[in-house]
Image 1 (tube, rainbow, N blue to C red):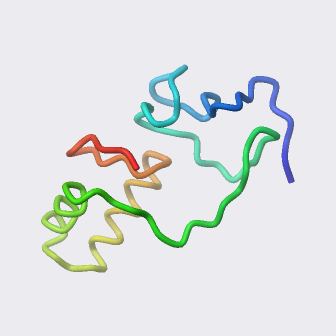
Image 2: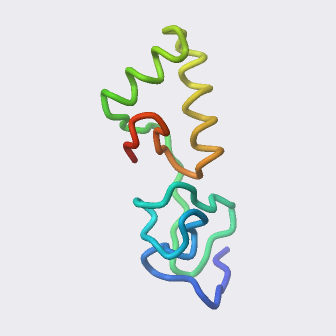
Length: 92
């Protein structure tokens, strides 16, 4: 169910927590709450396309263990609200 939000923007800037008033791709952290606003769609994601530098960094940080790689990616998404590699700076 979509919720009306007085400041919802069709470009998603209302989701940007850090820094404020930037487009979501440039944001360091997003509000990834399950509330869906009138300007948004809810999409179930099965796969993420991760750039090779980020994947290599996640693999190295996890010692090559696929379970730890997945956990590191999930932690990044949970913390930042999106896949934004804090080491390489890349954003998916």
